[in-house]
Amino acid sequence: MQELLSPLILTFELAAVTTIILAVTAIPFAYWLASANFRGKSIVESITGLPIVLPPSVLGFYLLVFMGPHGALGSILAQFNIRLVFTFEGLVLGSVIYSLPFMVQPVQAGFEALPVSLKEASYTLGKSKFQTFFRVVLPNIKPSLITGIVLSFAHTVGEFGVVLMIGGSIPDQTRVASIAIYDQVEALNYSTAHFYSAVLFVLAFTVLVTVNMVNRKISGKII
Amino acid sequence: MIEIDVVKRIKTASGEVDMHVKVDIEKGGFCSLFGKSGAGKTTIMRLLAGLTEPDDGVIRIDGKTWYDKKNKINVPVNKRKCGFVFQDYALFPNMTVRRNIEYASVNKSNVDMLIDMVGMHELKDRKPANLSGGQRQRVALARALAAEPAILLLDEPFAALDADMRDTLQNELKIIHNKLGVTTILVSHDKGEVFKLANKVYAMDDGVITKIGTPEEVFTDSTISGKFKFTGRVLKVERADCLYVLTLSIGTEVGHVVATHSEARDISIGDRVLVYTKAFNPSVKKI
Image (tube, rainbow over all chains, first blue to last red; front, side, top):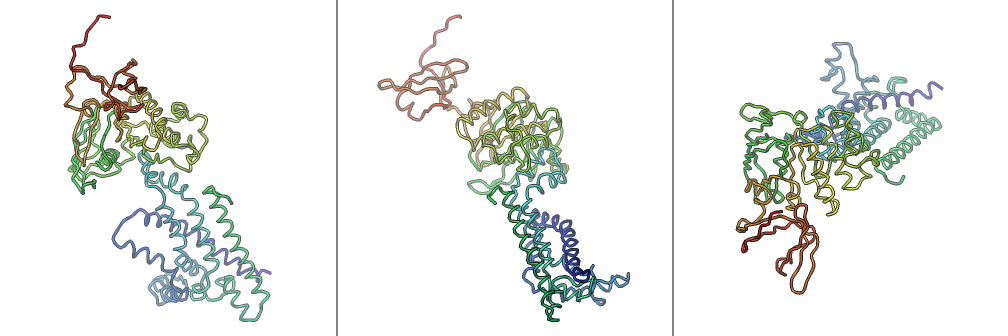
């Protein structure tokens, strides 16, 4: 049983860690992108959005090269005896990069849609940028935050190409549900493949329905 | 005393111009920046509040420098104590009426007093989305006052309201100003509003202050050399044969004035009018 559930547990661990890291890093990044106006902004936005259009195997390949023992990052980390390829930590880094646009884009759109006068009003009331961000800005883009968090989570749950390239299929280490489905189908073990697929299917559907309901409730529409 | 002497490049209806503003505003007064849209009124308020940076110049409040280009002084917005009532009110949608005011308040014990003062006690637990325009305006005013500002800046606060509500809120604002005595600057393009509220007007056009004075001095036709001039408010317009009788409220008195068809044509109830006489010597009797 433990063996059967291991890919599912690993998948949710990976998705949870990735989403937490993205929430902490990508939300301030999205705020900066929404507020700043600088030369080359469209290039930064394009790089951020690249994982949406790039085939996951391409991204996975370059990450493998980058994180490999002879890669730019891998060779530095090797000096400290840290290895990223074919490890859970490597998968987390890959997933963070792969799911970055799914967090940044909805949240950035939320920040941009917020009337500037709300921030300005808070400043004129004597509040700092920090207080304004946490008490006025963030609470008023709740639908965008929920969308970003759920999409990042769901997208990480569903990733395959990147995981396969940089993680392979090591049980309890890197064999997430999508890889396990592929392995089981290759082994003609359809019932186990069905089990994993059904769990992911139900989960994906439930998550989307919940997000849509919550967002409609927040914006005051009929559920 | 508020001393503003700044230069800022702005876009007006007739292209980009360097707006050079030099005004001194008395403490505790109620003044108005009057002019067409795009004349630069809102920009002056934003410069004062620190929301927009001037290109050059100095802003001083009671001898304290808020902005000085040469000495690189620029006090940040949140340290300036400028209460700003925005045209769209900018109430925080995630907070109730009470929370909006609490968020701003320097002294939490004043929150209830402010809610009562703007007549929002019954609605204090509602969110802004469930309030009417007039109610939002009241909350925005109370919130600005809760921060105990040194200056209150009102950017066309009544523009989105119907005439009745505008009238009511103007009266309330006047009462609140008289009570609290906060230096207030009102941006407006409504002469009636300025007449009613302000004791000093800065008329602007294309980034330049064209006239400074009391509302009577700025708005009334300087070619009228009346011996007697009063400003009044039209309460009633009645036709009597070939003439019109206007019922006016002048100060605390109500009186009737006869007007010709051409004079009465543009006048409607609620308008501010100037009543003057020059051809006759009025009789005087001791009372």
